[in-house]
Image (cartoon, rainbow, N blue to C red; front, side, top):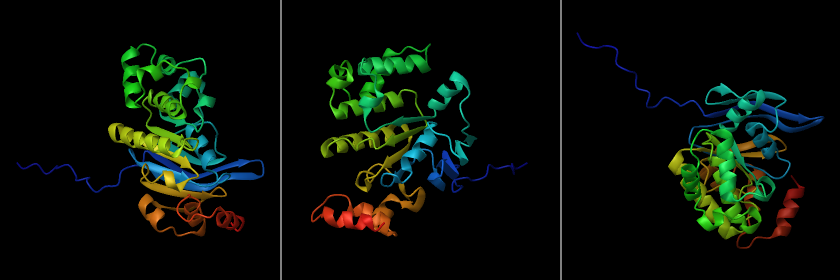
Length: 277
């Protein structure tokens, strides 16, 4: 008798997003920092959240990482709501879902610990019963940090090396999502390119999902699939990275593009345009 119970073809069926944000709002007193925003990111995807200071992008990142709680709205990761943490074990579990890399690693790295010791402490906290030296070596190789740099303390490292340590520490717990909050803003252009290339390689190797927070549209081209543009707490434009950068549909996005220095760039024109926004 023939088998009529063939498995359905799901090739073209849309995948459930890994990160799903719905109607997210955050108020501080009478000030609305994030105003009813909705977006999603698929597993292995990379989304840029772009806007000037005060646009709400960093507050959004802090909510996703659990550093702030929303006033209203929902946030799910892999289909599961992300509630407020309850106790140490729950906080550690949440941290293994989402990690963040900040702009200035000197503010987030322990100045007393070498890169190797930093990774050892992170692994000891999350995986106390697992041998740590092999994993430490793997992480140092992953971020291309030399053995000499791995044994140095943060203030003895360059800005690019410190950011590699911060990235390795975030990757140590194998998060599903890595939030990069202005992670290359403090670096010079050549080092920015190195870190962006490193992040692209890590994503290809691991399938990790990125949320890239920046004010600079020029740095997201190589590391994001899609972009949302925020202004005054709201999403004013969104789309595929190449399409949005090539054909922005709002004056605000065009202003952000014009703010990237290049041939014929005139800062006075940019300042005048900002005053009209």
